[in-house]
Image (tube, rainbow, N blue to C red; front, side):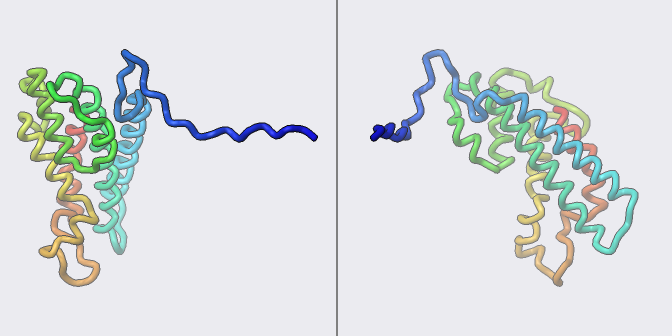
Length: 184
């Protein structure tokens, strides 16, 4: 009779070796950047179709565009915080960065990084004159998140009514600014 091999036991992960820096994305910044870019391209394609086509529920068709821009912005902000956090006096916990979905909090951390490395004067683009303009635009994008908009008490009206921040014309008007945000 043959002896059975002992079953492999689950082991706890090894601590990173000295000199190895642990990041929220385990060093996959390029892949995350490519994913964010693909989300952005998909949002642009959908937005282009919205401006060309009409349909029965066309106003609600704008919500996937916002979701895609929001998620792309979240990933870009996480990359900046993850990479730029090493310049801060107090390190930011990588797991906290990974788990958050708050654009506002990530934008605050990005502004902190920008201030720490003294890039305030370089941190501008069309529609974003300074870091406070950046934070305001990120807040706008966060407020436009479709599920949050629909749940707000002031947005409850007749069934199927589109919340104010999500009106197609308002969203389409803001798309160039959201692109500038992602370029920044």
